[in-house]
Length: 402
Image 1 (tube, rainbow, N blue to C red):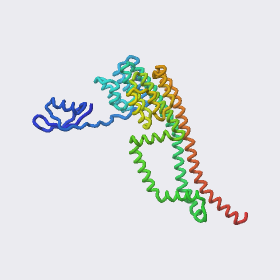
Image 2: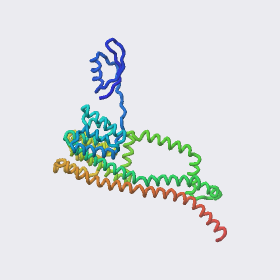
Image 3: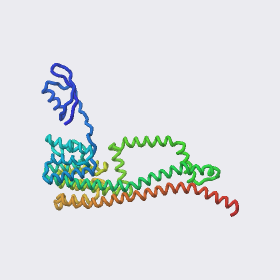
Image 4: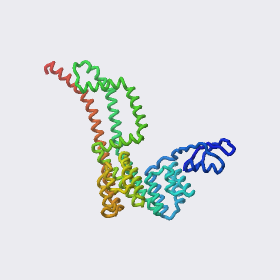
């Protein structure tokens, strides 16, 4: 149901303007007609998102508290009120929960209330929607707490591991700027008197002079590129291209493949075992992968499964997927054992472990790469400066006969 702004006329022909909530324009017209008001023009008001997404660590705390309260027999509405009394909740988070509670009192289902707020992840909403049908809200809330606590630990681990490479990158830039700005100019007058300079030294001075003459244009170029990146970074086509490149990168691509498969398997296993219909399992799980290039391939998979195709055969057509998941689905889906729920849990656990190893390997690659890049840049500069000096000393030695 959305909010419509409309222009209409009453029975006397007088022009009226106003706004009203309705499922669609036909319902709006019907509502106005009851009051003898005749619709002329209507436009749907686009509502802005009320709240930003809740952080994974806060989501874990909220879910755990909710699960414990419901498990102790506290009614859902009262449980949400008690959670709002937690001093650790931020203002935005408290407003979201109070809004959900208000909708519950008005008769809206918990999952629908969460979905309307747009502050909760799709997986979270889907799991609670399944829990409402099965009557397992308490167990689901505790399971979601564990899931999002694990996600938060992964995020924190990656951010912590990237701190050192970021410092190295800034240090590299600072060293290059200092050398180019203050060190190289000290040798320029001496090198100009030399008849012949090594190629690397010519390149170094060429770069240094180019930066001095064009630093303003370079700065403007960086600003323009940054603006263009910010503008296009969320464009679907651009994101798909970048995500595809990630998967084709040497060493990194293989590790990302493991991480994406683990995310899909874990989400799919949770939803399937919660009783969510398999089509919804696929749609939600695909959106939690974190790679738009892979996610886009699931459109064809959904069509094949709807048409009666086997899930395992359709999964096999998805590029950049681990064979372990496909084998688990084929064995568990009924083709051999008919125990897909159990097989998925086992496989998801194995893939999650593989994912942790892949993340650690990915992070461990960044540090030596940054050190090598820094060493190459600084080494090139130092060699370019030292070679002509050493060459001049050798020339002097040959002239003096020593």
